[in-house]
Amino acid sequence: MPASPTFDVNALALSGWWKPSNVSWVPSVSAGWGTNSYSAKKAAQIWGVEANQKGANAQSQSWYVGLQWADALIKGNTFGTAVGQPTFVTGNDGFLGTDESTFAWEIWYKFQVTDNISVTPAFFTVTNPAGSGSNSAYGGVLKTSFMF
Image (cartoon, rainbow, N blue to C red; front, side, top):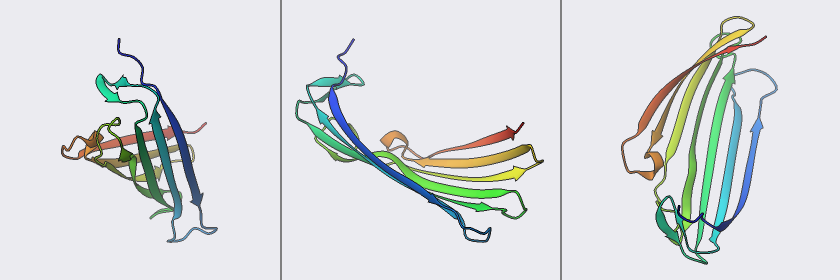
């Protein structure tokens, strides 16, 4: 079994949201940003690759922005969208692997069927999944919520 990677990580994340006091065409907004700083304490393997040398450093970040409209088209229904980048490398001495970026985007509409049941179809895409340089990935989700 390969040795466990040994490195220090310092992380900082900020997120927040704002909601208008009255329902209108103005959406609620949520946003977030995070950063990580890695420092190798000894040479080790990460995912089976001789990945870091003692003293090697790397940095990564992530971010997102989401918009959501209450009472979209019909009172009680909600429309939303979000875009962001999952963790991506911003500085690298060679032990984090790829420096390629990935973007993710989602769109959804929540139908309030009854006071206790809602159905939310959502669609998403991820460009350059896992920094692989491959085509985008697409998907969909159908969530049904029952409130008791």
